Length: 67
Image (cartoon, rainbow, N blue to C red):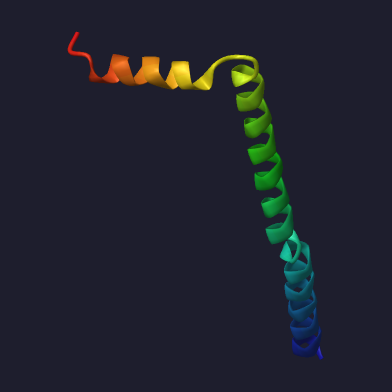
């Protein structure tokens, strides 16, 4: 009788553990998507209202210049 009870308890714990981890993948994807959105909004706010081409050209000149 004790072995049957122990087997049921072990099976029950394994089932609960599987249920707790079942939704983590979707939550991780949601978190990554939210983080990507925040980063894109931050980049847009920094660049908004300025000439991006000029900034890229200046950055390229600084990279290629031999100072």
